[in-house]
Image 1 (spheres, rainbow, N blue to C red):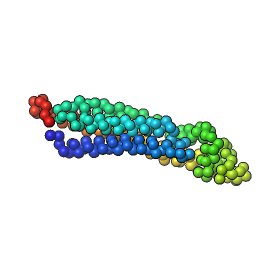
Image 2: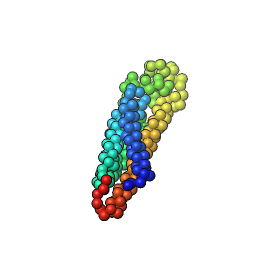
Image 3: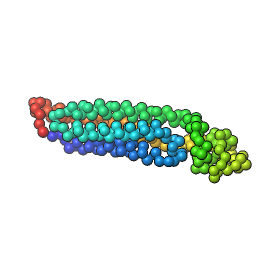
Image 4: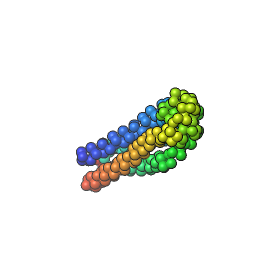
Length: 217
């Protein structure tokens, strides 16, 4: 029989795989709620990528269950699972790296998002973050709302310290850095799963070899 220790390790990593898929799907749905700041930081494409990744991980979990319930001498399921985990790792690497690259120029990237935003969106951001304009309070500012009410008020602010670039990128830093850290964590999990699956595969082969290559339950 396969050792209990090995099966316990496999079960732990498989549960983590399920949890990773569930977390990815859950946050991809939760972060779609109306939130003017989060909607600027995380685009629909980001959410769709996260949802796709979560679904892939959940499918991998289902494949892993199918592999482990096979008769002990049949290892083709684990071979398929190993390749699926390699695909998972590639997908995670691509998504995580794209996220990381975006953070390298986030001040400029979010400036473009600010310029593309509607007047109402910019007013809502200024009210939420209590700032005016993007790089400077006298640049791309939207008068109105509850904070940047008029030009006289805006003129009395610190030109750089009271601009919105600081609070926007601070929130973006926290959110995006956590996202790609977690995504890379999923990759480490996928790699560990590959190792455990290969160990189990080899275990099955050795047991089968000791029995002369005959199938057993």
